[in-house]
Figure: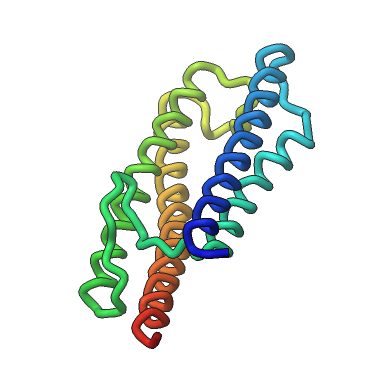
Length: 169
């Protein structure tokens, strides 16, 4: 298989994978609309599995791409101190924006009387919303930063390995 055929096969597999994920998401959405509950284990497993397959296929096809910010700006992949500092700063900004959005959505959900929310006694009233939002903000930032850091640094190393392989050929 030459490079063009490999690229076309990769694109086709990504399209099929995307369609499978959309169908699984549609099944889950329909179930939620009709029953107000999501219990379809196969659709959930399929939706999560397509994400894993997507990562696996991009690795197999050689999709080493430079890490990007939430807004799509490519980050440097070098292992210099300046490049690492720029990547860490971008991870922190992305994590902060995402944590703010998720904390705000959580507070809105609590204020609208989300029946499924687990609300301890200390999260009642306005003070509870503030405390819950702060906990969500801090915890969310830590989780999102860690995830961004792991994924971004892995992508950065992949790009550098691929560039080193091309230079050695």
